[in-house]
Image (cartoon, rainbow, N blue to C red; front, side):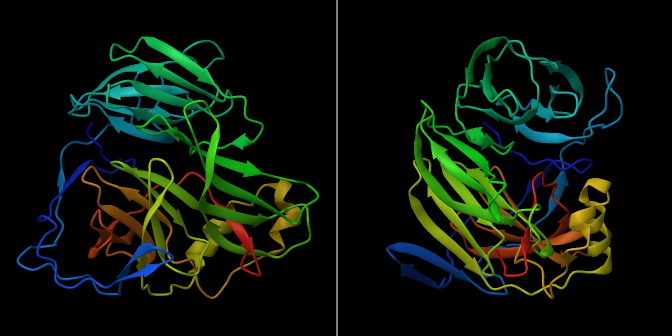
Length: 362
């Protein structure tokens, strides 16, 4: 299946590089039996191969009104072998289908609680058989649609944990669940990533966990967006956790074995007045009156903000460094093997879940 990325109202693009070969010495080390790729502020030079990226427009999707709604809240996007594009629109609880030229074709599903209907549509996948797989967070069910878009089957979870939108099915039949744990009497709650088998038995917790202060407790809150991410890279899982002070990304196989760590030096970025204003806007509702006064801003932001992978397995890391144009930031770009090869100014990537940390760095 063809993997692409989508940022409304940005463009689909082709990322053009040379092949990963003839790389001069890349620094590595072994920690607890795991290979660690060491990257620095400047990209590695690849011998006889250009690492300059060009972004070529394939098409754009019109986000204006079609049917009776417009694209406003995207939970996920996939492409099938024919180049058709599937977008999960979480506000109207439909999967929107476009052809390879960006023309709107039809929608799948609707808001509801019946078969093939969604209460809270979020992530979508297309497996190697071409089946569309959707994840409904509130109904806690996966729905499988055939190529002709007929409902094939549904699988409903009976887990007791609170499952978040960033959960999905892996190609080998395992599942990744983003789990939120909250004890009103505890000082901290957390968002974590866990791997489950095809029968929804837990295999293991992955090394992606964000602790956030309980808003019911009188704890100072650091004004930074803190996230834990899981993305797929062909037959690997990419785990990112920007709560750490170190710039580090982990690669796992589909059964949860840690294969490699990717580390990089980074420039510390201080929160701007614009950043502070936008962060405080998240807490402008009266329900946050008891929280707003406890927010403070640190001297520096986390090492990075978000990650995603393209169809070739390259890893894009969204930093907090200001880009060349308004609304753009610097992305660090790595080979599928974790070698830092380029930097590019691009529009900010949309993220769905954020948390915040307290003054102790939790």
